[in-house]
Length: 474
Ligand code: NAI
Image (cartoon, rainbow, N blue to C red; front, side, top):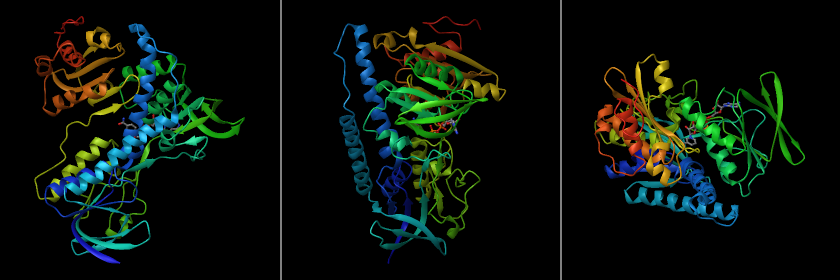
């Protein structure tokens, strides 16, 4: 067993860990980044990137059909799922190879292996790293960053079996289009992947335990997604609990309890997407005096320090929201803290995007959430149906909603359902981060004709100054 000494050791090369290691390298801090699987973590390998690849491929199919409205007709398209998956794998390969290269180019050392805490050596921490071949090394580090991420939650009776029941990783790797596709959980993953297979031709059934899908976003926005799923021939069961399944005529027959009734949903593939849980097993946190909270997360402060000096944690393992960009931001903050800079995670807003149809993007407080908190809010809305650009691209479904504090018109939240919502939301995040008032967005000249004008118009609408939609009297 070799013993290595370093200033910083980062455990996990996902979107929390690898930006942390890159930034540490840039700041001249000797750093080892250890990863047991492939660089890039869930996001690059089995999450954000492969899902967005399949989502955009499946949308191309729909766009081709809609082109007939614009006077362009193609023949009936065919889908080669094997080729689509190979294309997706090519993107992953480029990105993951890029990550390893960036880590190295910035002066950090990348190592394959599984890390486990062994104990403390004064103020330093001892971590054992086991390589794929079983060889073990001891790393003694002044600073250790835990960035081990999360895993899909399993529900009893629905363990992935490689054929009928899959988790998100399995669904992203399907090499065939199931005739029928059921998802348990109407959240981010269930709906993004459910609508993807629906566009590719699967008959979709969504089984959601609560009384509506997408509870993380305002009800008026979630409704647009529900309507689209139903318009495309899908079924949404709410207040529904999947109790078990059995094989029936080459399909999975899922028993679903809705109120007092038990229904049977037949599906070729069942995706379980009921949330994710933090990964700490195997780390032996107790060896260094660390423990998790009741939900399994590692408690940290605003500098992402755990209660043990010199040990930090970032990303999904420290709590919600479990989003890649939140993890990266935290990883970069920790790198600065370790390098002795006065850094702290004081982000006012973590934007979130659900890549459904329509896309839903949010930054800041939702209207429902603000009202539930008893806040006095003023709301402005602008529908994409009134946007010249949205008409020109043939995508008018959705709207922008701006939520203001009624006392001073400060922007509390901006929510977008519609075309390119994922790209439009960054302006909203900047506005909230800068403490903008509605007027700041209204007086910022937005280029014409663009979808971004809808954000400006919604801000103007909130203060009674919209040009292309009727204002409410103030
Ligand atoms: P989720 O928390 O978004 O949704 C899970 C849904 O399952 C909830 O609506 C919940 O009420 C429902 N549910 C829970 N137990 C159930 C049961 N037994 N039967 C029926 N319904 C049940 O979780 P999801 O979709 O698994 O995604 C996990 C996380 O991954 C997200 O919360 C998000 O943080 C992240 N993610 C982010 C994406 C993005 O940024 N675009 C995309 C995909 C995932």
